[in-house]
Length: 148
Image (cartoon, rainbow, N blue to C red; front, side, top):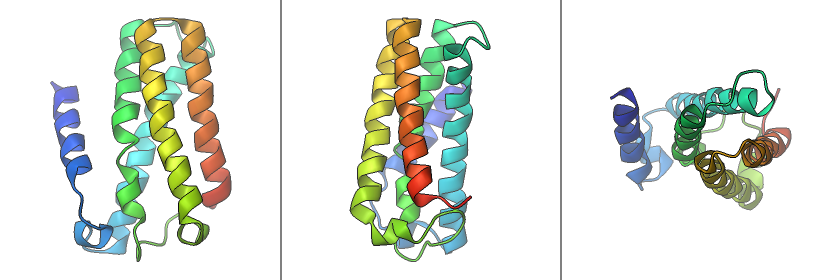
């Protein structure tokens, strides 16, 4: 039930096609929104990484559930990076190198879809590869566009 509610909320948010300025009353709201989405992704990717690294037993159903959340949430934070939403840990380079930033965002969405496919296959080796690719995309973007 909780996953259904989260899914409905996230899909509603993803369906919005208004510019960031119209979605957020203040730039701080955009910062909180994108940070919240990234936090949720990191929590679920951490659960998958724990399975991939053998820190917790592989659970195919849990892997699918976590991967699906990541794939859904991966589509959300980008509207929180519109003009006038500078701040948080985001480097100004995001707005200077918007094509590269968008490329990495699109790559994350693609990696997340592959993560779901690997989880649904129920193959731990495939999951390990998909977790690694997704984490590498996150790291590449953070190294380029996130302040420490």
